[in-house]
Image (cartoon, rainbow, N blue to C red; front, side, top):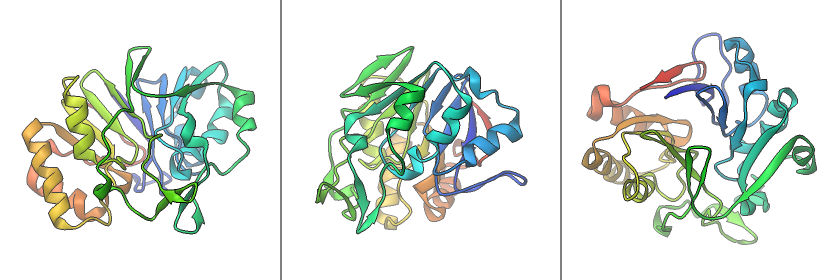
Length: 249
């Protein structure tokens, strides 16, 4: 599995970064799109031919995962887009709008949109949507339709031993437990949403990582404190990836 990091909160020297996530998987599949045109600019720097992309998966409807889509689609054609219907409902972080930041019709003109509901298989990729809710682990500041957002739209991706998460709002340990019931997970990669978590919570997650003996690639909303802790405790089983990096495990 080759994963090219097009967008992350930190970057290699000479590359762009922002609060967002975008991963190119084996040259033909995109998982998330970042916030703005950062993923596009980094793709250009890396010499990535975006016209080869056949499918895009959107992990959930927050701007830092779906915002860059309209920029990337300008260099794509005949692409399939997989997104949960509830990702398109207006989302908020407190009073601040945090959802899709453009007219969705722009996307529908450029891509074939497939609405995801539940677990499904697409071209050798497994979408994992049916993750049980552990409400105490979900940030209460996130709102949808005037209520606590339980992230029913959140999808995670599994292929060839890799489990990829966007923000893991439903709990990265919870997602890993669910995926491991079905698949042989050897690597977990993406945003783990631990940036504001207590050390007790971070230690809980580390325990589950160790139980499942996975390699860990923490990114985006995992937070510096948690990333440092995982690296100290997992050593070479924790891989640090920045925008501009290519990960092959």
